[in-house]
Length: 435
Image (cartoon, rainbow, N blue to C red; front, top):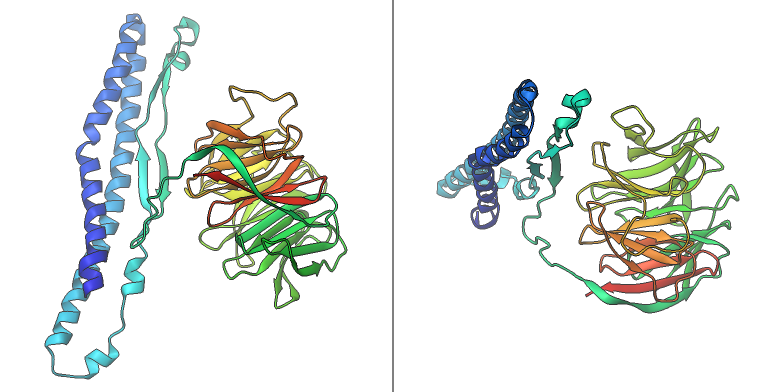
């Protein structure tokens, strides 16, 4: 009862209030949008009035969508609130009763109610004016951006409100000498257990002191660059030679997934326990991202809304990671771009290395990872640095000290320590880059 009254129920009430306030203020935001658009229209001739009216209709339609999305989410939250209140009434009745059996038979729903639904964030569309061109009157007048909808996981009892800023000068903490030739990938759940692989048949596990704890030899004898650790701490690895994804459990290798017509690449375990993997076709002409739940395929991400490939078609390494906002981030080496889609597979943005301070050599990216602040880090091998971006693809800074040489695979542990593979040297460097 205390948990429901003091924690869970107030959390739902807060979400309800926020949604109701957003709905109440919805008209103000859209009115501002209409004013901006109308001012742009005043600069044009009478012939564009029909275009303005058409765009106002678009705004009205989008506004209806916006309202419906918020109302739907509000109704869902209120339904759960109603169930919580019913549960409280039922518990109160049990308290008042002198019968023992209702108490014995009662099953707590605290765990169920503690799983707060994702928070829906729908941003207002924006009006983007364009220069006047009478031959392309409608297309160049401007455009209304569609609704941008994202979900943000709610944490009930221990929300992560800590803001960690970037250090002015990243610090090299330690270097692990792995003995690997051409080190490609590194992954960890925490800094105590670190797995790494390269262009050998061995996948090695080290502790932070650099002591070798375990070595796994692949059955096929192929070299491995796709490794991940699942929520239970088991090692997963992709074997491009056999077209399989495998799990290492109690020292034994179990096949988890077998592909037909495709070869697996890099792997990532999501916050919900799903497995994301990049893969390329056996004829090296297509690439895609696939989501698995266990061994069952749930989602395929391959094309944008125009039917064009999101990723370059070849066998080059495409590293993958999931951000805190559930965006799926892929480092497409051959395309020279970070490609980010939302959890529904819709393209959000591309980053092709155009920050204020440029490097001498072309952007040759490999490893990619994210931290607790939803920042994205990607390795630029030929420029010997790490690019740090915000979740919207804006360049923030480089990590170009710490004597990095040909950085390749990346991972961040649960304390935001960065681990970097040096491809040619076979070292893994632990770097502190947040305050």
